[in-house]
Image (tube, rainbow, N blue to C red; front, side, top):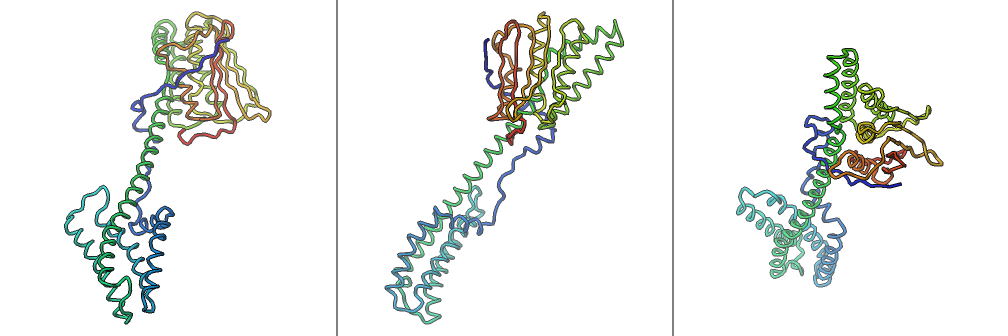
Length: 380
């Protein structure tokens, strides 16, 4: 027996119907914008920033406590550090938001610089003089100059780091959403596949029947319209009952038999107690199309079998098998039908689904194995 695996067929997402509700639901869902102060505080409290900040500020506060004789010097130092952490990066992010140009950069810079001077000098000297604390290590003139510079540069550095991190997070979320939207559009295109040769041949046959046998033509038109209606409804669904999938395959085989009742013998082996499992729409249909295209349509007479079996000790797997006359000769260059099955199976059941096609004597056997309790991918 010869086994063959088919590569995934990359469908063009542009083929997906633009009006599909499923498509509209695939619109980008990015993380919401958060309050600048809240997001800044959350970012500062993150371990990757909080730990270095503590490492720098603890020695600074220790020196303030040891080298300042005034009571409350440690509290004053903690207040100055806390003010810097809350105000400096938040103010910079508000005045200079990443990705948007400031309306007046010079004015924003003056505001940022002025607020830094006012807070550092106001708290360091004004508050200490107000409570009669006197001069401390952090409130000497040289220290205040250094602290103002640290406010400006440190606030800018923290703000840029936070902005870059948030921008990276949003870009990753955007990329993930775009990937999901692309996969969803690709799935719609894959699900909408129906062999055009089958449609053309059937329509040509119906045109001939209209002249020769009106009743047969009418029956064929009704069957074809019902089948196409089912296909269109399946495009809008993520999954449907396996019984509906089997009915769609039955309709396909019936259409061929309407054209030529002697073309093949259809054998359907489906258990009466078939589990009520759901499957991706039109997952089995390409196998049925392939069986007809390379079997009876090429002059290979005999049985076309559709077999469904429940497998596993715990009956947790279902096997769908399509057999047709005509030996499988390997994948053909440019073929798409079986590649579509492989691609859709990988998207719907990324780890548990299986697909194979092989030659069995002078026949071809295509097999799908699906979990009964599928851990379905969110992209289906």
